[in-house]
Amino acid sequence: MPLPTASFPNPSPLVVLQRPFERPLGYVARAVKSAYFPIQGIWYFIRRPAFYPLFTGRLLPLSIISLLVYFILFAFAFAPQLAFLVIFHGWAGSLINATVLVLGEGLVIIQGLFEGFFVDECRVDVFDATLIDKGFIELVAPQRILFFDAPNPIKKLGKPTQRAEYQPWSLTQIAELIFFLPLNLIPYVGTPAFIMITGARLGKLSHYRWFKLRGLDKKAMKKELGLRSWEYLWFGTVAMILELIPILNFFFLLTSTAGSALWAAKLEEKARVRVGRLVNADDQVPQQTTDGPVYHDDPV
Image (tube, rainbow, N blue to C red; front, side, top):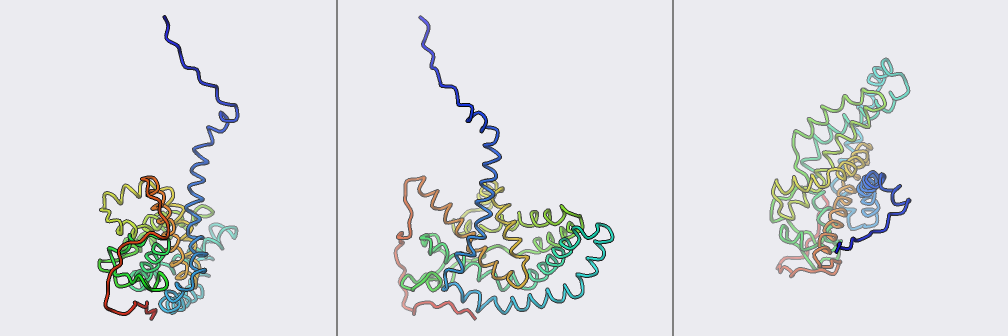
């Protein structure tokens, strides 16, 4: 006696037509979501006055110095480079290419002088405070002193008990910027290529602090980066564009840091819900005891 065979309904014509587009549309959706986080970080930062002292007290003076750097570059380097580009490419794309080229040169100078030494500590504070604000205080608690009775996430932050870096500063990053700057000499495609290539590295570094808070080793970090390499490309591209804006580049460094923390919080929430533990802002860890006064972040 023949065995009965299962019959499945044929997919509708609409489903059949959609199948070739599912994968490309999935890539587009992932790119848009990750690229939105630096923008979301701006809105998040602006709506939280408690974060303002980190910029006004620490980075506003550096923003004024960066303005001087860009003024000198545009006064003396912009015109010769524009003239060179016009000779070979005409006016069509030369103005944009020359502008990005000078902005990139300014970024190299600013990163070399300031970012690794004066900015990173401030970015760590923004990242940790954002995670605390989103309810993930238990991630931060093992690696720095926290004052749980303080009125806002910034004032909850005490001194780190372990080495704390938002992203490791290295000469390699500066060298890559210098190496890829000549891409801006290529008409039309050169400037987007420069921004995306340098943005890809910037994106991969955006979660370095998160990985360290989770205690990941280099092998585990590499695996995580591989899983989200497409998303890091577009997060970093948008963050790179914001970093190239004169005067406001230090402000956008902090807002992109907040955006990367918001992204990390979203990933943490999804991971914990998957294993059956709902996560919300009411999650708490045992309070640390301290005999000292409530910590106030000194912006100077």
